[in-house]
Length: 472
Image (cartoon, rainbow, N blue to C red):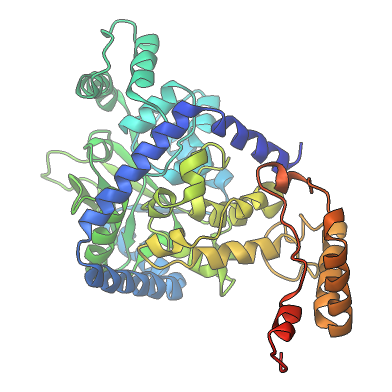
């Protein structure tokens, strides 16, 4: 089955599920309203977006230098830094750390990079237990699903579905559809897991080169428990998360929390700078930082696609996307869905695998307007559409030209020739007007849900001449 056929199948499944569509519609509307209220002063919002975009652009422009500085300062602080070019190497590093400590149990905070690595499946295949501690991630792990949103992984499930899942997986817990009761139940189940785990794993929101500090933003406190209770903490992150200075973090944090959930500040903001020091009573004895490349350096080498690395993973582009709101995250396929996923994931995993995602957009521009760091998402989607059909294949994007169709290319060449040759263009439009009633009512899938357009009996040039305009 082609990637387009697989994508179409997933989209159809999503559109045929009214409960799923209702869950997304209600939640996305709520998140957009909260974000709007969090930025009542639009001038302040635009100023903050510019500051955030400049901070991220500066960090990316100096990324090689900042990554070296981050490694030096983390090492000086006692954090062990590991570099992974591929997800296989990153998984191997995590496994080696676990085996060095004879560890079999890991407790995880929320991390989209670990989703990218498919770490849970990898570790489970090696006989390791890996339990998600973020409530949303825990829910989808119980149901053997992937996240459907980068901020709210279980957003596709209603409270009734979660209640039935909890009862099925934990029969000793009384059935309840009350959200607070369900949350308390999950907390009780997970509390022991924190205590028993030999390894805690988390993601990183910002890695500060100036101080060697790993910043982690969260609301549930599970991130803090993952990074402090187990004796060993492993942080995994993409190399693009580095920022230059600690002073760069507050503006980005303002943008991240308000754009994501409409909060002015999250409940927890963790700054991890070292393992436990002598005399301290808690904290891990070892801290490891795994820096994953996985094609990010390749993206970095393209002066236009480079902008996609600015992302701070707030999810605002998804919340505002009319396509994502209707089909949800699972229809996309790879770990990061929505507009930013349609830009980043094909570049990481190849256009031959996920290039079709660049077409999952109406190009309405809502994602670009919502992005807190001004990533030109519609422009990048255009670029990837071109990359997957370009003929010369001289660029650096994986899978370039893989979706090129000889028939489609011929049609566009013909279209270009007609529009570049005035005599041919006038003849063609005249013929089209004369035979407009011969156009069939169905012209492929496009007209299955739309009325087939009819060519006007007279062209604009003819109408203008009839009105007395002599100089067209």
